[in-house]
Amino acid sequence: MGLKAIYKYGSPPNFYRFVTRLEPWCLYFGLLLILIGSAGGLFLAPKDYQMGDAFRIIYFHVPSAYLSMSAYAAMGFASIIGIVWRSNVAFSVAKSIAPFGALMTTIALLTGMLWGKPMWGTAWVWDARLTSEFILLLLYLGYITLHASIREQKKADRSASLVAILGIINLPIIHYSVVWWNTLHQASTISKLDSPSIVGEMLWPLLVMIIGYMFFFVAVICRASSAEVLKREKRSSWVKAI
Amino acid sequence: MLPRHKRFIGILATLIGVAVAVSLILASFQDNLLYYVTPSEAIENIEDDQSKFRVGGLVEVGSFKRSEGSLKSRFILTDGFESIEVNYTGILPDLFREGQGIIVTGSFNKMKVFIASEVLAKHDENYMPPDIHPMNESSS
Image (cartoon, rainbow over the protein chains, first blue to last red):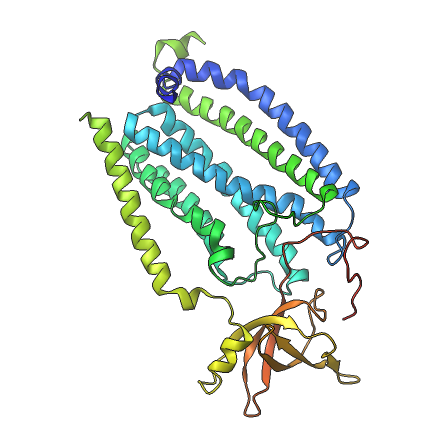
């Protein structure tokens, strides 16, 4: 199944054409969903029984935390493809995900601190969830720094990919940290399948926001990775033809 | 075997190896990774040292008392099996209520009263408007 796709879109000109065509759709659809989700979350959803209006930061905290992890999964996956298939395109994708992922992680941490200060009574504790999410930020920064510090492109790609791949182990730790250990952070609300922990009027803007963030993420990666591919292929004839 | 199969197996083996190592490390540090212990566990180790630790539980309904004109407060913290008496001087977080899950930092004094230096509120994963919640507006 996917192998043919890897060969087809692994060729830089095909990849470039595909992502530049995909980008605007994802961008506008994503922004539209974010707009709808924000309006729904900030104005239409009812107040929480305990936290009042303060709970509304969930509409930014959860999507960015979710994206910080799925972006990392995508970066790790692209790195594996890059190493196994020696694919320059896959390395470009992995490299362009890192800054966005680091940004999402930072937003998740900051909105969490803003939320924690009034509700928990503290902005930061070193419990398992907060610590593992902080390690995720360090992994992104490690990837970015390592890649930037090695001058030779291929070596930089391979060494940084190793960080990306090994860091995948942190993802289940973040996700299950609230189950495996006692944490100040509460357990998951939406990723469990039994009785819903959030009423429908509060839930739909959250889901819309998450999907909106995802499309926005894909759009950003399309833009960033197409630029990266152009830079790497600047001497080839197909780039000169553009 | 193609070189790329070798590379794939190499990655897989490395990942599995590191994952096993990490899980062994996490398992052996299990106790240190717990952010708090329950009142039952706290009582079990009551004769231990005087260093500070954290206890998490529910504030027993009807147990909260505040002395007039000061920030001193007293309440019972319970996990449904055991309960401990907590004394705390200071400002309580917004979500502090009877029946609420909280985490206190401190240690036991000689009277086996837990003297807390910090109180954090732990909120659960449930979100709902006030008119749906069964015990809406419990006082703090």
